[in-house]
Amino acid sequence: MVRILLHVEGLAMLLFALYLYASHSFSWPMFFILLFAPDLAALGYLVDLKTGAKMYNYFHTTSVPFVFIIAGLLFDSGVILAIGLIWLAHIGMDRMLGYGLKYPTRFKDTHLSRL
Image (cartoon, rainbow, N blue to C red):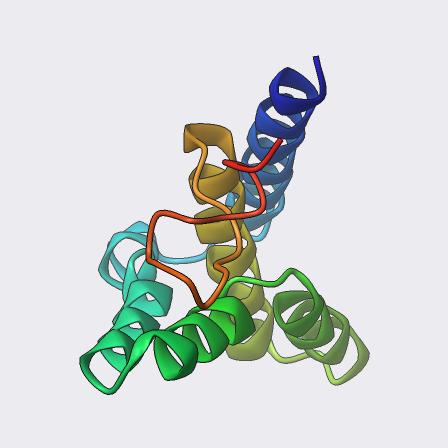
């Protein structure tokens, strides 16, 4: 049951980010170009498992995009807000599909796979 709730939570995060993105009339080509940018953090796995997990987790925690979203709203910056929403949408999509934060043991060892 917990796993299902986490997948639904990811879907809710994705839909929330998409709704806000659309309501601000941001660029959809930019959305699709940047949607998978956080996955570039997986290049850290070329160094070793520990570095890869740290980099991946930094770019896949919701805290950072929420800082961007809040900063975009506070400073009335559409670019910063759009980046935060795209980033949040990416994380929501990942969680919806079952991809979670990584442990340094191996790439497929995530917080969702241990549930």
